[in-house]
Length: 362
Image 1 (tube, one colour):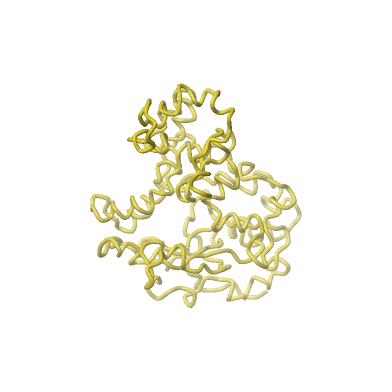
Image 2: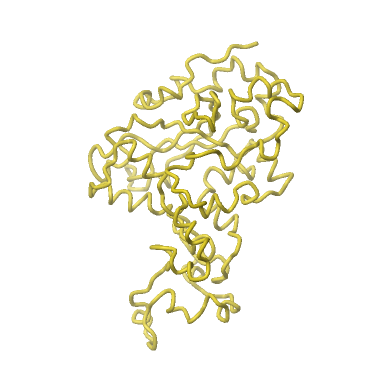
């Protein structure tokens, strides 16, 4: 978007709405009664909901209270994983690195309901109209459009998109309820803390125990996650760190190519809620020297967390290449995450995810 498009209030109805009371200055600050642009914008607040949800709480008390506990707002997921890798948040270099990079994923009320997220360069969605339901394109996929969006909408070349999108036209909020975004009052520590908020069995209960007559559902139900058999094909993994610059001074996250992978690994999040032994995994862009731009050894316990992560992939189809026959998966070494797939410096971090013995052909 052009700079002026990002801030131009083209929705005239907004001027008479409750959200413009008493006026722009009421939310954004600035100086009244002056005509000079710079003077008028003195101490302007770009996003009044960045520091807290109190402003919205005036009318939306319950939503604001819940939003303050959401992972989108707290960023606890990043903090939990980085702490497990040994990051000391009292360290000034770590604080600077986190503030410059990780905090840009902090989602505010305004970034979902009024503007595009900062991580997508911002800009009003619809001339300052307040959207009750966030836009899929400008909100959900503005942040999740690198991996999840192309998977779901079939934009990865040669790979079918998700049946729920192409045949059902289902927007994100169909499966991901408001509690997934606003929070539910629980101070979760990472995205897989607690039971899955979206489960295939919610809509397909007859799959459990093979009640639908499919033998594989009986055999695999607690051993293999649904996506392993029902992912339509390769999905995106990223292999280089997001922080720092390449030898030409360009940011890695803008230049480093992603790779399409399909890897079945041991479940790094195995629990009563996620009992499967085998799940799909994708590589996360975390390297031992991810934050070397800011200081030495900022992740001293790097090996504590795998770099091949549990991946609830979003390109589901009923019929897929690997579920046509048992031996389309069994005995197919290239489908499984083995030591040969893992960078030597990451073997220790991924020792519990690597598949040591590929299931034999039937």
